[in-house]
Length: 154
Image 1: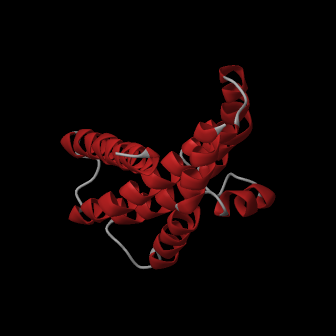
Image 2: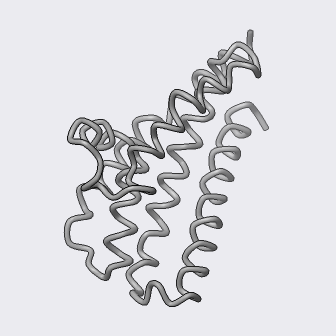
Image 3: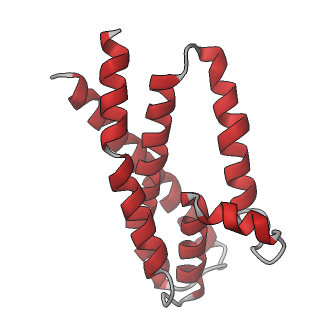
């Protein structure tokens, strides 16, 4: 076992945890009768990919921050705006146009749109978002390995 194996396992476990959390939310929503479209299950692989993106970003942050006190910057400057601009709490119609432009670049924005479309029973215009999420996950994939190797060697 080497450092790459540990990093890959950490990334995979984080992505699987995302799927577990997503399935739990789907089950609760279905039990309350709020969603009856079986298309919602198609969002599971997308949840895995988004979980992988968040795991990659978290591992990159872990490799770059100088100490534990610096993690608050990650949450304040990255995670909080991500949730605020994603459309999780407010619909896209409420968000200002500039906010929508910023949100388009975040994976959570695309995941929210995909899950909403599948929950509503139509999968028409989600392919672009799915491709975007897959491209970002693939583009970020080598970065945590390189940065964590460098961090461990130091």
